[in-house]
Length: 467
Image 1 (cartoon, one colour):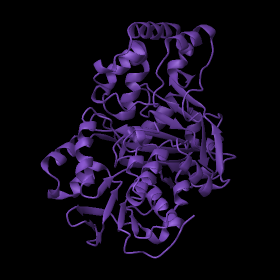
Image 2 (spheres, helix red, strand yellow; image 1 turned 90 degrees about the horizontal axis):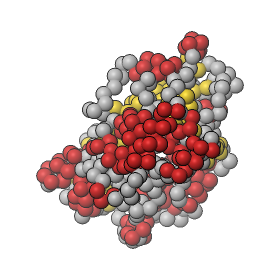
Image 3 (cartoon, helix red, strand yellow; image 1 turned 135 degrees about the vertical axis):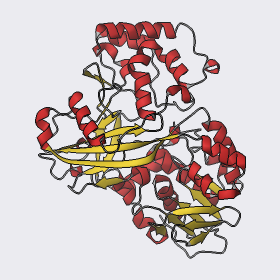
Image 4 (spheres, helix red, strand yellow; image 1 turned 45 degrees about the vertical axis):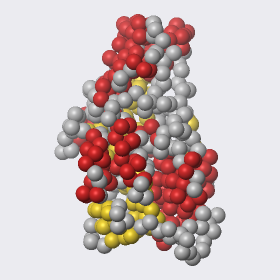
């Protein structure tokens, strides 16, 4: 419960840039502790950041990506329950991989038995060859080498290499191996062979085999419910353009300023460093320039017929479609379409970068053509498409590149010495702790650090727990 009181002289002024999951969680935790001297300042007209949702002119609600709500943290679970009450859906994951003209249960590496026999043989032989010797991580230099050593040439060829390029829009050889954690199911040869020989599905792996979803408002509906708790401290449509870490002043696009004692930024770290201008030494600016990321086109498609499946989401490694993942969003909640009795919606994700350019002008047509190619739609559905909607974001995936960790070891300490803390999906720039629950935890743990002095507990942003 909030312990509201007037601002006291002992309360340092805290400014939080960004009202995504991390900034909102920090604000919520501050008011929960009874802290009054803070501001949460957001550039856009609404809260939620990459976890927000948008509604098309035709009344279809789309998330910025295929988000699901599962948690590593009791605090997040309690917050969800407190904010949502009983207005949520609880679902059992039905995730699939489309390959060789058919759907296979996720994760693919445990369910190859449904592939053509010659492909199964190639994958199994590759696994046997790759796992002849124990894995020596010290000899693995990048993600591509880890793929080859752990998954073998067959799985690398058919899934791991093309799919990861589609997601990250960077070649896997440019990525480090440290980010994986629980994100990728590492194959057990005995398990793979057992599933093939015994002809069994194996779809239960993963931390999100059950998940929750807000009934109203999409994923953004959860974070919109934090607003009443921090309303008097929240400012929207106020983009920051400069941070002076010596004077401890933030300047905004309209020329106004805000002083602070402690600043938390959830902006992309490279942008934050750039906003400090000449204050950042050359080495900090150079390391910030080495950080890599990708953006996304999120394409929503509304169809005037009910969904004919209970699938949740599907992965697409092959080149017959531009997207790497599609979500049956209307299977998560009937309220994201105008009339769930006769309509359904699909949400496609397409990454882009300098290594994988995509055309904004043709992305909807490419998406619909891809949906036809992979049989998400058939030709009779084309006249029934009653909504298309594109969400574009330049920053959606902070790439765990080979240069990343060295850059973070330089940038974070320089910021911390000046009472500036960069947190969140792009603030910490650690994808492995970039889920919504991780992002909320980063905000909460940061407040515990600066207000309660619990520096040793701020572990999520360091990627030391929760993944």
